[in-house]
Length: 139
Image (tube, rainbow, N blue to C red; front, side, top):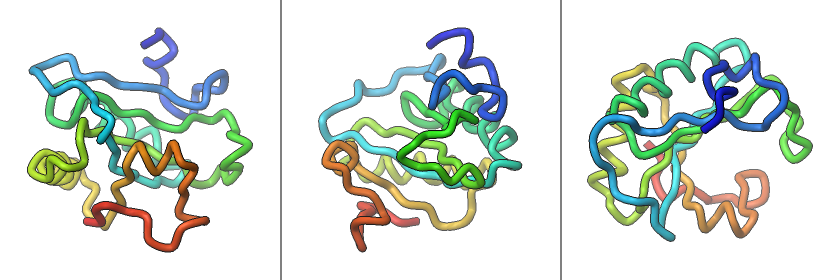
């Protein structure tokens, strides 16, 4: 994690992502069955939401890592009005952990339904615009 990661998503323009890592407590190492909760946020709300998620991640209330899309325009996803924050879990098959993290996200204000995507689906290039049913979880 670089010093740039201390910035907010709208301030960062050199990299596509900024990251937060757990600093408190233990969490299992990421596995080949890892995945993430996807939180889509409007550009005007991403900094505020990222601050909450970054803090919760660092305090050990979520998984091992989170990342947020920045102001740098990603050619694969040029819609700059909507950005994504990913909250990672080590194993999508560990449903109690995946559900626990989703509950923590609700506690910090993400009460609408969100999707969970496996790392395998990401590596295979499966995105919502190309696959009708993608989420392992939708809560």
